[in-house]
Image (cartoon, rainbow, N blue to C red; front, top):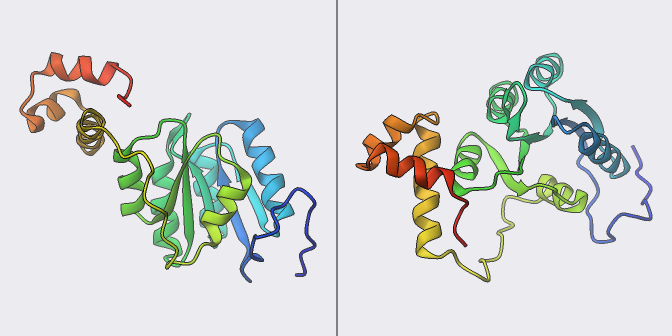
Length: 191
């Protein structure tokens, strides 16, 4: 399949790989349609799903080489889609998108096999580059490292996710009073 460059594409993008099947799972239908069109313009054969259930059905019929999955969907967690994809096709490359960025969810996504984690709204070029990047490509170190308060908050979020969002269990593991934990979880992430 010969792919012609599209005028909106960046000139430094590499061509898509030979198996160019891509599943995109996102419950924001407008974003889903825009990203699907953008990835088709970049040479991918795209299937789009608006729910975990729909995405899992598509995976089981034809496991794609690539996936872009929203972390939080109306009917469940995008992690389930990535875990199933990795079972069915271990060589696949998945990217997680989320509007709720924190290190805990990024760590979870990478542990189950995602190759990258991008905050929404993600640029189509960023998604494309994350999908086709070689394993040797390393992200540059951050220009502004996290504050100690932010690191603490991220740790609490990670334990909270590991405890399946159970406040009592998280408070017990962190040796913290439950109400104190609830106040921390209710606040925005520190800078």
